[in-house]
Image (cartoon, rainbow, N blue to C red; front, top):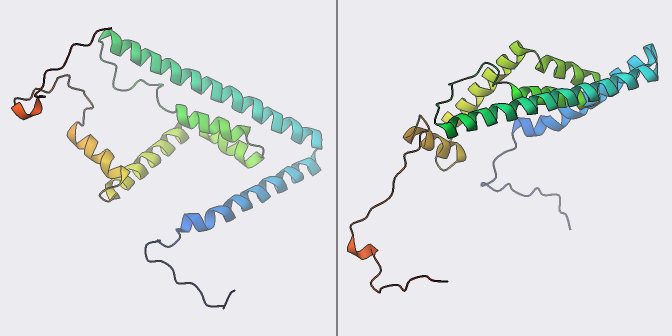
Length: 191
């Protein structure tokens, strides 16, 4: 039974963020704009031209994703081979960045719609990839810097603080405390 009185908000639940409030509205507006643009292009040319544009976007996006995946896998295998042979890999190879952004561009090309295709083609340009990469890196670093204690960002920051170079030191733990050893002898393991 409802009385018309609003239920009080629990103090433990934070208020809804702006992104969570406006994201569904933005996605709906984007979908309506994509459909409207496809209808306008179909009215100016024909439905077959729109179909060809959508198929070309899927094919081109698939080719881009496949090429970026192959390049990322090749870079990974080269790095692993260098590490196994004891050679220090170079700090940064010229074509090692941008695989994720190329895959994002390919995904945008695969999505049906002309606006997503235009954004996907933009993501394939190296200057745009560098700008998006720098923006994403600054955003992640700012979020990690602002992370409070006990969060994942705090744990990542603590891990980077102890070993900033990422090197692993091989070794073993030796304890001299007599309390750490078992008192009764253990039988040998035989099978």
